[in-house]
Amino acid sequence: MAKQTERYDINDSLYIFKQDNSERWYARFTLEKTTKWFCKSTKKKDKDEAIAMAHRIFLDHEVRLETNTLIQSKRFRDVAEKVIKKLQQEYEFGGNKRSCKDYIQALNNYHIPFFDRTYITSVDQESITRLSEWREQKLGRKPASSTLLTHNAALQLVFKEAIEQKWMIASQVPVLSSKGESGTRRAAFSENEYDEVLGGIYASEQNSHTEKTRQIRELLYDYCEIAVNTGIRPGTEMESITWRDIELKVQGSKAQFFIHIRKGKTTKHTGARKVVCKKDVIGAIARLRERFPDRFPTDKLFRLANGGETAQLGKAFEKVLQETNMKNSPRGPRTLYSLRHTYITWQLLSGQSMDVIAKQCGTSVAMIEQHYSHVKPEMFADSLSGVAFEKDEPKPKSKKTLRRQEKVSQRDERRFKEWEAEYRKRGCL
Image (cartoon, rainbow, N blue to C red; front, top):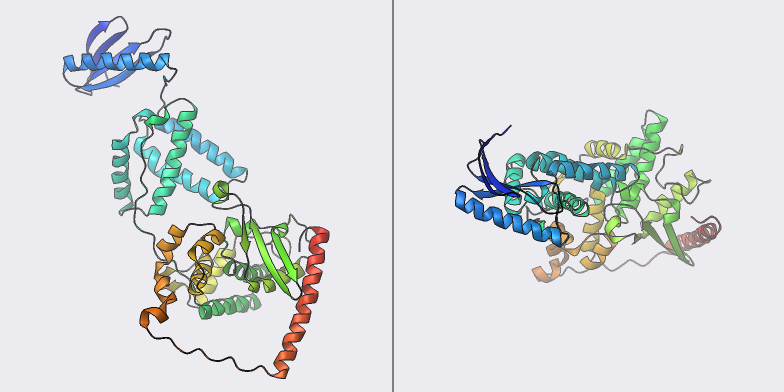
């Protein structure tokens, strides 16, 4: 523990002193109408300069007391630990689990070890710069912008808590930067590759050794079909969908499907969003309806045939990727999340605007520009190359094909009328 080595009394309420662990003078003082003694560093080595600075510090605190802006600061660790407790409670009561987990990890692994016993009011622009340098050394590289955004969000929660508890004032919060390494390109599937993966899932379902494994792979097939045809984020967004979240509009043999996303990465800040489904979701929805004839609107969409939930879809998908040699790609390893990247890539290649895709996927145009800019040249291959291939003229349909299409159309009209009636009756498809 530091010992006082020198002291100079300025008046009854103010004095300066030195400790054996520093060459600089500290000011210690008490204010009128308070019984608390305050201690602040003058940051001065010269005694006369320290006396002058002590007067300034004393007067500054007197003004704050009169204007009701006087704050009693706390150590960074103490404030951060209060924030962590709140995040843990939010996690337990259904908050955004991914964000809560990421913020807690950032605070525990980076902010608390670095700032520790530093007063929250002493976390200034200079210390933020030192944090950035220390973090880069610890990581062994420059962090990605997405990492910095997560770290900054966690740190802002600490500052917010300190302001609400009157341990600091808003003007003392330093500016945080999120300039980091550009995000990497996102691994996706071509249409042929995706078909091969689906075939691998189906084959693995047929070769399952246990009934539960078969049900996991059966569900994975439908999970993939809905993810790749909507752009919904695998994880919380997909797994929180209930039967009442699916909406349809019918006109004869045609139907449009929509899914309401009420919980996920961005819903806390932007609210729920309504996702438009590609027509290829019909098969997955039909199979899920058959497996759950007694479904209720509040039931989760993605359940095993026995009614239970599973956390093994990602692992099952990983195994299929390995078996089909689809795990690695020129843009990095593929995961269940690659289904979302596939949707965005296919939409860009079809000519859909980035603004529409961003709204559909609950992200920003800037994020799509950052991660999918490699797709754009391919979208304009004809104009960039100056060579436009002639498109094959569609072959005339045979009478047999026309009859088959007519039967499919009649079947779909009956099916969609039934689904629409059931939606009105029970509140879900």
